[in-house]
Amino acid sequence: MPARSKRLDMIPPYLFAEISRVKAEAIASGADIIDLGIGDPDLPTPQPVIDALLRAANDPSTHRYDETPRGWVSFLEAAAEWYAKEFGVQLDPANDFVQLIGSKEGLAHLAWTYIDPGDISIVPNPGYTVYKVNTLMAGGEVYETPLLTENGFLPVLEDIPSDVAKRAKLFYVCYPHNPTGATATKEFYEDAVKFCKDHDILLVNDMAYATVAYDGYTNPTVMQVEGGKDVAIEFHSLSKMYNMTGWRLGFALGNTEAVNNLQRLKSNIDSKQFPAIAEAGAYALRSVDNSHTIAMYQRRRDILCDGLNSIGWKVTKPKSAFYVWSRVPNPSMTSAEFCKELLQRAHIVAIPGNGYGTNGEGWVRMSLTLAGDTDGERFNEAVRRIAASGLIPSSV
Ligand SMILES: Cc1ncc(COP(=O)(O)O)c(C=O)c1O
Image 1 (spheres, protein in one colour):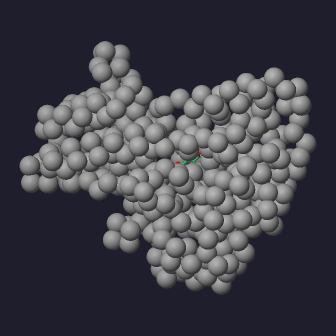
Image 2 (cartoon, rainbow, N blue to C red):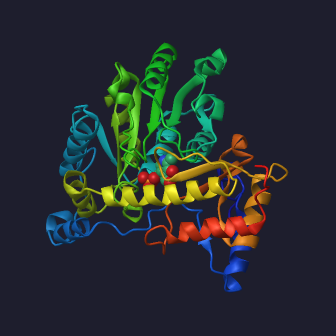
Image 3 (cartoon, helix red, strand yellow):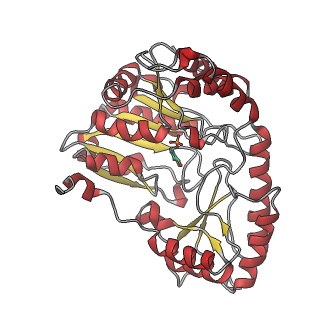
């Protein structure tokens, strides 16, 4: 066999190998695991969306290649209607949108669309690793903006060195943020738009969790800001919004040139999805109200956060996304050590924060998606087990 490309060696080692090993051992010994690791909606896709897929699959016009330039027309039209309704911004479905095989695919391919050797992507630390890995594989470099609690987990634009800003082509931001659950303000987007305009950078806003929000909170978007469309492309996903992670459907919108460039790369790599999936996605965007799922995450969030706070582990309730991001309660432990102990003593899986970057060290991420939980009872059980584990120093 020939050697794999050097590019593949840029993919960092799997950081959760030890946790996976301990988890496999616990499962093999019959332990009742509460897995707060993966962020994947546990409720099924709403039945009307499945029905729409069945109807579309029975229509032979969906059985052939989708030869449109940017995506299945009714899907892109539905995406534009949804965006206008949700965020009050009217964009052109024929020119300002491109269909994606999930937003991960688009975020990855955007790096390949823009980055040459010597170019920089500014990426969040901690953050979703896709931005960094694909920039590196495309031959570029990354500058990691520290997201710190004292700045509300927003990058401090003045701290970005001017030589970095000069060489940067992409500035990835993600709000609501994975893993911290932080949200952006309109003022932040205004500043980021100005920064990107001044330095000729494409602002990339990952909004995979755009509509997962609690207590009536709604997320702002960069397209709501004056000049946003001049400098930004925004990524949306049906995955978390409609419990459709397995369907692989998302879209990017915004700056027409950026959308065109992304579609130009994609048209040489993929031929889009089965059009029936896009048709069902259009139905979801137009007709499905998934508020009962959001309400369930909110109940789970309250049970977990109130419960942990009551036993001495001080955690903050996220306004959006479905992650609780919290400091390791025992300061003598690293994130990985704590998560390993949590798994061994309480049979609870949580993700060590350093998996999302160096600034995640000392933190842990717990997801509010949990298969097998019907209305929060497993989160009550998680709190009970953590209290009994002896892992929370009484002084915390
Ligand atoms: C921040 C962030 N962006 C994008 C994605 C990708 O979502 P999808 O490819 O399912 O649309 C995820 C998935 O977990 C994510 O956490």
